[in-house]
Image (cartoon, rainbow, N blue to C red; front, side, top):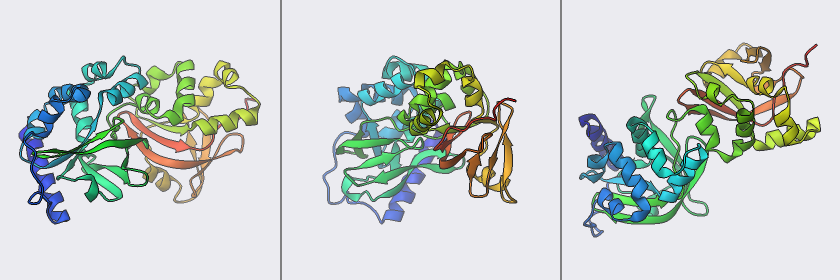
Length: 326
């Protein structure tokens, strides 16, 4: 375990506890086992334990520093693995580099001992540092304890408040996806709202391209956007996937480079601007961030800056189309 990560864990915990005015440790019985020991003793966490070991986080999660761990079950790891084309959670741990696993795991850890009764809706800074800041989770308490990750997908706390000597474990039903670790295709595969887009990318043989070094900026239509486009164009999904124009339509949604929301705002600060796509044609973006495609159709940005390891995804509410060939 590196001295740097140990120092980060201690510093983050001290800062969190100072901000919260301390904890309730004096009033509560301290569990005899630490976080890692509890996980090791529960078969439902065997994949999590394997990931912790490979990422060299055992010491950090076994020390005296008080931590809150949102712990995915084996089933959660299996689901994540299968979404990106691997057999199960074990294969996921074996496939991902230790560094990537470490980033994913520290995205599941929050400084301090935070029982479910102390959680408040808003954002939670995690111990995963991304682009010089703590990557955050969204937290909702409506209908339970619900976490929203950098991909915009949600995990539910299914079993809260497993007390440990160095903090608390809350069991969750999904692996949380951090920014900047997985590639664009993996990110899309892990969000069910992009299932039609993923099917199209696979059919058009663009997986290798969009999983490559990049960087790429993808304006990603949701399933609802595809459904609306199919109705508009009087096509079935099968007809779209069989279309000789499929690759051109998809690459019209891709721009070379890592174009964040702030970059788009800067681009249109002086007025509407054309953006050149990988397909070769352009679309127009207005100062209100409305996209007008090559057929004078419009799309709105509904979510921005879903950051992948090889670029960024911006979610749009319509499929955009290149100009009709003369």
